[in-house]
Image (cartoon, rainbow, N blue to C red; front, side, top):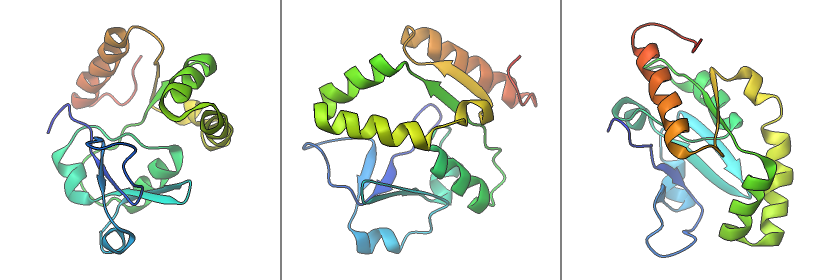
Length: 154
């Protein structure tokens, strides 16, 4: 659905009962999927199918997943990349709250390498430590322009 992010398939177990944002499947179930975006983190696999792309507008993924998508998706939907840039202190605080100090440090170090240079590659960079309404407005404006054939936000 428009405005709803794709819930990627993952072999990761839920962090808590009722966790949303992913479809949690076994390794065997995952291996049967026709994935057009794939990434791996911390030993777990994440992916989405062509049908999910066709029926949604947004997908949250790391750069490896973006590049896999660009190589494997053969549908007609144009792919635009939006890099949500969050300051290091803000990212760290969010991760500590969600995953604890040790896991937050580990994730920051992994992401530093995984996302290096990606903001220069993305179609749009939006600061994610702003008021979420400002960030959402910038994304909405970009999508409206893209729908009318403009590829880059000026």
